[in-house]
Amino acid sequence: MVYKFVDQLVYLGDFMAVVSVKVPEWVREKMKAYNKVVDWPEEIRRSIIARIEEVERVRAVDEAVKLLRGVTPAPRGTARTLVREDRDRH
Image 1: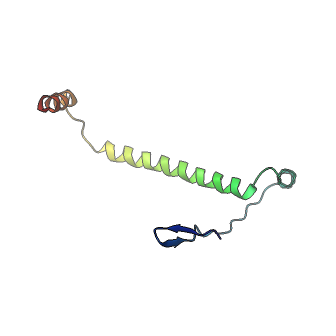
Image 2 (image 1 turned 60 degrees about the vertical axis):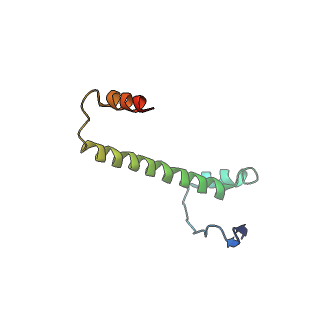
Image 3 (image 1 turned 120 degrees about the vertical axis):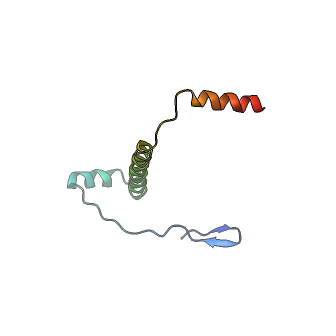
């Protein structure tokens, strides 16, 4: 385990859980063949994390769209008026 000192506290890093994945035998053989070149656990971890982040972004956008559907739009010219008022104050 890697120890990092952060503001007088010892950070032990993230604890890992084990996840098993079944792949076709030919994939496993290819993985063995490239084992010296590719760090498979790290590749799989990064791939899973990237997919989770992608799903979370999509869900966040969906939530924002749902929230915005309930908001009535400002009358036409509101942005122009607010910008003009702000510029006139400075």
